[in-house]
Image (cartoon, rainbow, N blue to C red):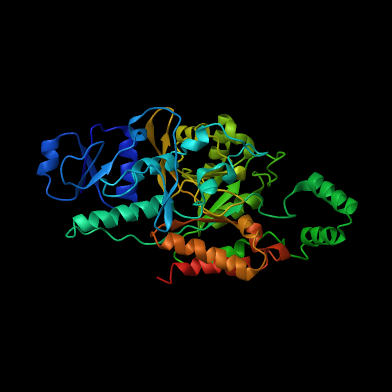
Length: 433
């Protein structure tokens, strides 16, 4: 156990120390404001305050962990070995930066509460983030800092044995619509045919009717392939099915159709299944509740995991709605068009509500890569290079790699050529240890 002496035990301090010490390093942490208790402790210990008591392991504290609400924070990014950090500490501190305050800033998504420019879908973009602007988006800096902290502690307490943690993966399969042509209904089939005619997409018309007349397999129906892959690997795939109403943004299949319900049940026999929350349910708690009840009825179990349509998050409202409906985990924290670490970590963490200054029970599992971001790379070789780089950066800190693919990614569409190979590369990365 690590005992931390501090001048004030705040909710923020408790939250971030638990993430760094317990979730990343696997060490239990406790706090004290009593000097005598601190002196009497004969194992791992440190002080986290403004002034060092004596010759103990000391990290000088920044004010952010003892404040409430939002304020103007002066952030100066500096190099620290092969990474970057902020909240420089000076020479007396055992490590040169207050990694706890810096980590809190990233984990709480402090910057997403501050004024910023949103994209056309109302999303916080990578380009607006401190990590992107400062050039550390593609590093799990919170985990890197945690291991630097561990190394410094180990020098002072060489007899202490830190537990071992292993790299893992949770592949996500996003299903905005299970099929390209099937189960779309007469009106949508007719409308799609007219649109193809107007754009001279005659092959599309042929393919549509070949599928509907059962002469051809639906191109987006890749579930047999995915289930077969699942049977051969230990890492559980997590499918997110959209079952919301048809809208401008969400063009899925009617969730009342028996074949669609059967598909969800079939996938749930082999893989984990969660809810892909429709775009308009993000801000409509009643609609969200209907979707949750609908998928629970299909799965015949309580819904535990969710992902927001278009990876849109409105902080803190989106997460508060999930907490109200007792959803335990969310997989939306990431960027669609950029590979990297939106919250600076590849270790799942709990949502901290900055308005209420409270740690919530909602677990945030950040994703680091979406299939669409890999399309920016021209060749398959380039895609593999980028993919290996992100895998290696997560392996270096024994983190959790969460890539997001879609059912259509595994189709024969030329756009997605080579993506099965990339998916297999990810699956095989666990066995290379």
